[in-house]
Length: 189
Image (cartoon, rainbow, N blue to C red; front, side, top):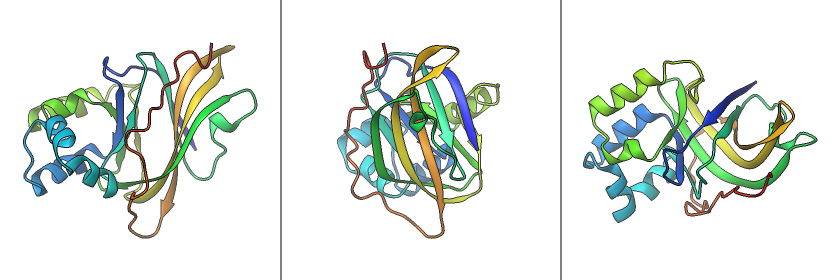
């Protein structure tokens, strides 16, 4: 199964984040973190801990472009590996934990003021069609991140694809480079 979302923007900050955002709220509470998660994630080891524990998957170096976001499940061939696509980035070793039957792509801005109200407002906005959120079974997932360009309507579109494979035990993302730059500018022109 594949879920695709078009025209996804990065809010002018060079980061995308993927995860069960309600699990991130629990991680914040369990670790006694302030509402400014952006500050905590960049000034202590809580961000690295969230990645290791499968709470969040950061995608750094995001150019200010509209993206096609793709979630691929169930062993389907990734769109960025199909003929005609241009694959630039492929990074594996990520894990994600889902406990609220939803996985979403969101931007760094929510971390700057991560309150119950801001989270509620974001979840309400994501109920609108076309938002990069998918429903899936709770559990642990291995994730491979692909970046490049896919052909849609005869044109190359910059794209990021998250290839998810269910795992049957807890995982830990210990060998990933959270600062790896997934830049695509100029690659697909």
